[in-house]
Length: 191
Ligand code: IMP
Ligand code: MG
Image 1: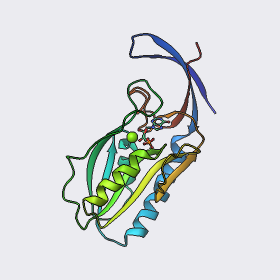
Image 2 (image 1 turned 120 degrees about the vertical axis):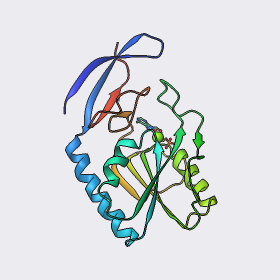
Image 3 (image 1 turned 180 degrees about the horizontal axis):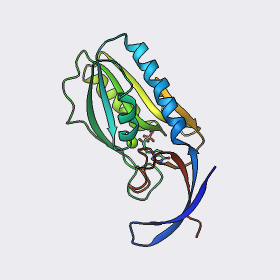
């Protein structure tokens, strides 16, 4: 496991020290993405899939996953935000769904980065159901253990992880670190 200590520029302009340790290396993520794509393909029996990606965290996972799915497929993106700025605890959930086309009768595959409290995906799935989707399946790269506050079961889970704040492969802290090719645990400021 590699550990790096570095400084992060916080919104206030102050630099804080943070520690980052690799949790899941890029190669392991790539292997798991192939497995998930296989499961998704088998479950859809050649039928078209309408992917709904949840911005911004989904973007790296979505890009890798969809390229492994051999089905007729459309990609649409919606916006959800619950972490405000530097906070690492959930705030008010905001969903922006105005980019979605008519979902009536469509088989929807929601793709998101992580299931934490479950609020985002539970609410999004309910909204999609109300819009008449024929089926709604949900794929998340990560599921955080011991954090869920609502009853919600994703159909595809890449990795179950401990209750830690993670960045990389799409996940951010204060909009940084999404571009890391691996997943890392970001520890609280140490100085
Ligand atoms: P939920 O509604 O509490 O399940 O939160 C889901 C959203 O919170 C995810 O889509 C992420 O954007 C964000 N989130 C939750 N845990 C983490 C984390 O450890 N690192 C980065 N973002 C996180
Ligand atoms: Mg998100």
